[in-house]
Image (cartoon, rainbow, N blue to C red; front, side):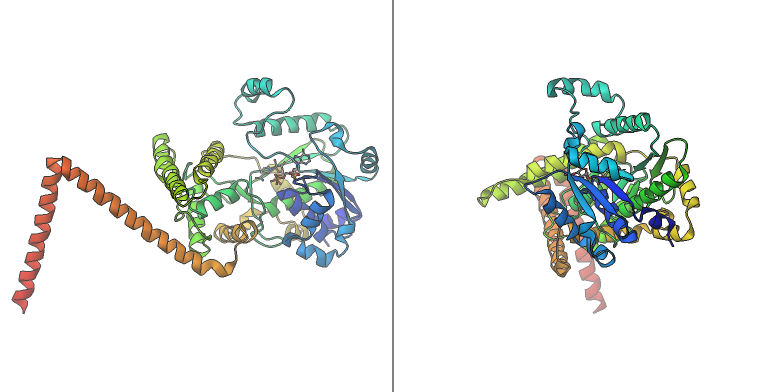
Length: 455
Ligand SMILES: NC(=O)c1ccc[n+]([C@@H]2O[C@H](COP(=O)([O-])OP(=O)(O)OC[C@H]3O[C@@H](n4cnc5c(N)ncnc54)[C@H](OP(=O)(O)O)[C@@H]3O)[C@@H](O)[C@H]2O)c1
């Protein structure tokens, strides 16, 4: 029997950010492993014209929750959605709901956050904030890391006699094993990059190929989170422990190797209607990246927009490309460095788990096979994010072949035009050209003569 699963049984649990990527995986695992839990309260804001109930309905009816419905058929009765907006005072929670939460909640998982790296700080008037933001964030690369640090500080200061732990995941990717491999449902971080590369939009990035790509699967983060919840409540550590949930220390894979694995996966599982053939080059040189951005990213976008205009359609590729390059540039700070994290607390926790819990709540990434994980990730992106049909793979492969032929034709034509212009303008180029032509002619004559002699 899993001690962790038993611990969550009968409990009332509050989750913030339950409509997000990690929040959904967390909720799914809780219901699947502790179907006898009492209730999960989730703080939800109405969004995109959807009511709270519609948002919950959509989550419960997604592919992610298929297994849950088998083990916990009354799952919809165990979710209680509470209208809230964490940006408002008292989170805009009604008095009755607040009273219920305060009376019954046993455990809180706080997963809500804005994960945009450059979001505006929201304490004061926009103009003032814009002016003081650089001074506030100091050496930090963006407002995201700054507010994360502030949040942790507040939590530590205000924890009082509540048992608290902090979990710091690195770059969270698709699920590794549970509820099935490769599940992902948002474009943040690596998933967006995989789409951009697979569709042929993004072909070169400023990154150090030898730097560790500290990717961590979403289910690993969730397993560690649930184990931390159990350990913190049962063992009550004296101080607030911080758990780094990373792969770099245990099972490092660098960006260069990961890019090769992603490209290999695209060969097997290509995306439909790619703009160009997938490619993934890394450079740390500013001039080289500017050159590649101009030649490999912006120029094809401009040409494509010109084609759209000619065919009476609205140009959109340049705008899309600029947005993509801006997003990628925000990641550069993280992908140009190898990061070292202390994993003492994570390893301590691993040793505290029973063999059954180590199996059910596995967060040991030493067992992760990167090649297999990346292939499942690409498959997951194709299925769950792009919603592409697997039956379309042969057609997608043919499309990539066509793009390759166009690429060769284009390069050959470009070379011939450049060469023609050069020999029209330079005597040296003309001499080289005559030398090559006469050499080829002599070679041909020699082979002809030798074949005539043999006859
Ligand atoms: N994903 C990563 O690579 C990564 C890496 C390290 C740490 N983390 C941390 O892990 C946590 C979860 O990340 P995630 O990837 O699951 O993010 P996510 O998919 O963007 O989900 C964010 C969640 O927070 C909710 N939220 C944001 N602002 C809110 C507000 N004002 N009121 C109520 N709810 C609000 C969102 O609700 P809506 O659905 O209404 O927008 C959503 O449920 C975050 O703390 C993040 O910083 C993530």
